[in-house]
Length: 291
Image (spheres, rainbow, N blue to C red):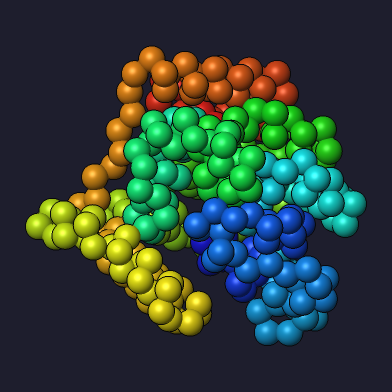
């Protein structure tokens, strides 16, 4: 998304995708879910993409962050009903790596205190209780069936699959594939903007302090500050936290391998069987699952 924002002729929503096609997002009740912004008014939703005025929509290609839409078949069906010409760029990762990354974000943001294994064991319970997709660590890594639904709804020629590794190492080739997919020339020669500050060089001296204090600060700020002020303050603190030497969670053992191994196999089979247009380069054992 951020890379394409640099290109002329593209427009993104402000705020970040407000779940117009999945308004039920507003009903989820996990700790992180309270931060969601939902737009249900079509005029407001389309206006969110205009850089200067709504008329700009007539001359730009709108970019939608649909990374969670693919988890919900009804959202994909709603997109097909409203925008049958939509194109999909699906960025993928190896299943366990994706789940660990999602878990790490929840921990860093102060919304998760349990271990990775405990979260996996609680996932079905939380799902029934109405916790949102950020807590579906295993379910959200099973993108094989989601991709199949997108392809069956829009056709393989309208779906581009690319690994996260390839975004950085093969950005020129990925840009060309995106250009062919959407029919818009991409002329910006900048390298892929690696904006995940978690990967910036870290300062190990302050890591332990942040790890202990940040969840407390987030909980306190949410309880005593207005929601908009708390969100802004939390964003500043979390960005600082991610620049420290945060210890990436590790996962091993037969239980976890049994959970995630089949996801990688199913995903690889789907990619091969559907003949999707850009071969993925998984970041673990050559396998991948969608991000």
